[in-house]
Amino acid sequence: MRTHDRLRIAIQKSGRLSDPARDLLARAGLAFRESRDRLFCYGESLPIDLLLVRDDDIPGLIAEGTCDLGVVGQNVLEEQALERAASGQPEAYRAIRELGFGRCRLSVAVPNDWDWPGPGRLAGLRIATSYPQLLARWLAAQGVAADPVVLSGSVEIAPRLGKAEAICDLVSTGATLMANQLKEAAKVFESQAVLAAPAQPFGDARAELAAMLLRRLDAVLSVRA
Ligand code: PRT
Ligand code: ZN
Image (tube, rainbow, N blue to C red; front, side, top):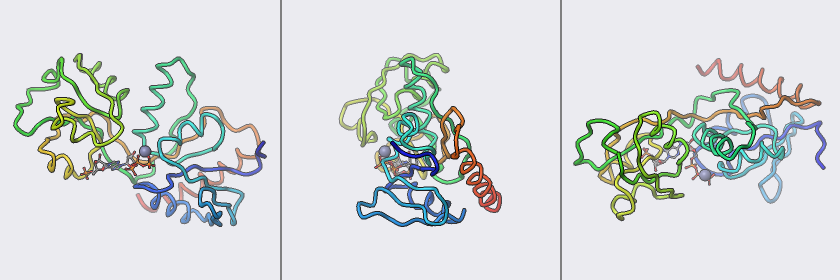
């Protein structure tokens, strides 16, 4: 059983959000000692520790109480929140701060040579994605019935493999789409890294630690803005 006199923050172990997340926490005055397995970092300046994990695991770790806060893409957080809601589970976490890095958009992309009269163009077609919930919500809002094909990676090659006609994937520069002869047709969701927290407030010493961390983060974020 973990004691609740320390706060535990989950961040991505390695990937796009790891360095900016560590940088932000360092600017907020947090310093860590890394453990030998490099999955846990002990907070030396404050009773705030880090857990280094896959980004996809962060919402679940907060939901089950293994971690108290997390730095994660809004795309991942919202997708998993919709998944929980769809299976009747209660809201478990929410984004409490936008962090200004990891900006990208989840977009529908189609082959370069398609005309694009609008989302109705997708009716009855297969759309490859790793974000079926966000895609389904957007399709419903557009009043379009299409067929999501869930892939965990390399979504951009699905049309060439004949697995789907279109894709719905994260885009930042657009270079990956271009390299795969695809063009961005519609934006489904705009994303950036956020600080995620449990939906229920902490009822112990963690509340004060979290409030102090937020004051420090706000100071850093206001300088950046
Ligand atoms: O191992 P782990 O599961 O932790 O890592 P991961 O591979 O799932 O995540 P990672 O590091 O690729 O992305 C983490 C988060 O960064 C995402 O959930 C987004 O919130 C954010 N992010 C920002 C992006 C991008 N920009 C981005 N461009 N995530 C992915 N991409 C992909 C994009 O889909 C394309 O395939 O990067 C490629 C390059 O994009 P272009 O448009 O610049 O060519
Ligand atoms: Zn991931």
